[in-house]
Amino acid sequence: MARNSNDLSVADLQRLLNDRESKLKDLRKRQKALQKELDVVDRRIDQLEGRGTGAGRRRKSGAAVKRPENVKSLHAYVTELLAKNRQGFTLEQLATKVLGAGYNTNSSNFKNVLYQCVYNSKQVKHDDKSGTYKLVRASKGKAAK
Image 1: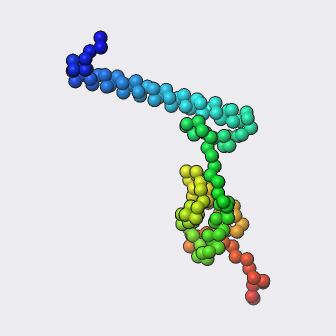
Image 2 (image 1 turned 45 degrees about the horizontal axis):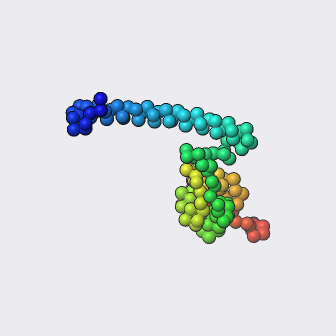
Image 3 (image 1 turned 30 degrees about the vertical axis):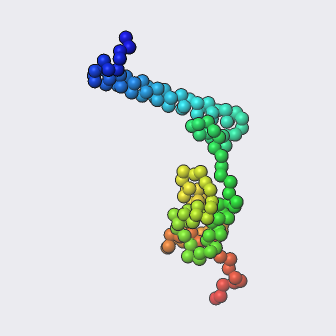
């Protein structure tokens, strides 16, 4: 049955190639289905162990996701940068500056994380006119009448 590769025609080689591609496609489809099933099992295990749905997230390789360690909190980075610039920053500029200052993140949507930080901060306000975020300045005594 096994023929010498020199004896195979182009049509035979094409048929062999098509068979292999078909088998590969089937195996990838099966792999995807099994991965989905494994993800469901992982989530259920996490729930039973009390880790909830977020704490025990796993990568496709099965390794636990490790949060990056930062010297300061995101809020500390934001307030320091805004204290240095009275004009403030847009969300995009602030994201670039925070990451440039050394803040580490695994977030696929860091701007959303940053928005949540500034939105929930009592020290940061949004200036609708300029579209920037600025640090709230403490007033010095009573305002003049």
